Length: 276
Image 1 (tube, rainbow, N blue to C red):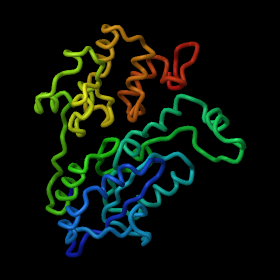
Image 2 (cartoon, one colour):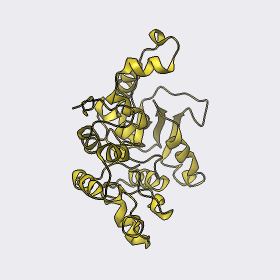
Image 3 (cartoon, rainbow, N blue to C red):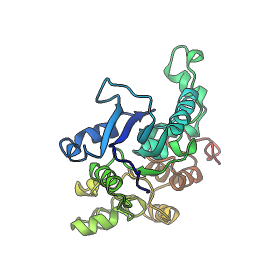
Image 4 (cartoon, helix red, strand yellow):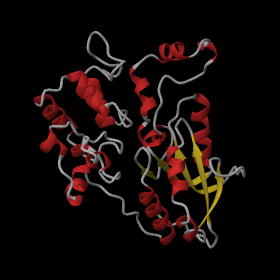
């Protein structure tokens, strides 16, 4: 990522779309360490933390959440035009989030099942990641993001170097930390072999299989893992359920889910999801 050449602190905006605000809270959780970067960054827009508003332009924009309405689709394009570097933060912004599972269903059916007057609700049939609407310069994955990765990104920007973000599986982290493999020791289904690390292998630390919160790592052999899960006795519906989590709309996971009839609650009698 190129350095933003300027003698002044970089103007930073933090905005959200369809999300739970958890990744913004992760930013606030950095706490006093943000002060160390104060000479390089000036946060001018952050609705979660301040009532001060700014319409930009922004040197850096951190975007949380997926695009779920027509208004949001217009808004993100407008923000992109006022931003030099745009970074998506969290599973919702990078892969659609849990709400993206509605992509396997009819949007009208979902709205009708929630609201007493569905005709008054204007929404898109899908909830999609930011990159499907505008150019994204970098992404921080996770549900929520890892604060350490966020600090690395900001530090790299301030120093004019490429961020050193991990590109390995959760399994590699487990081995490095000396964690017991939940697959070998307990026979627990785990998405660790195909999931990008970043959580510190939190779930395996509690003898649970990885849920894939950080999404598939590059060139992950998702079908290979799915075949292994089937050999261990999981049927197609259960395998689809395992992948249909926070990052189920990520292309590699989505393909595995669709090939097995879609996620729970969206399966069809013919055994094919909406994308089939």
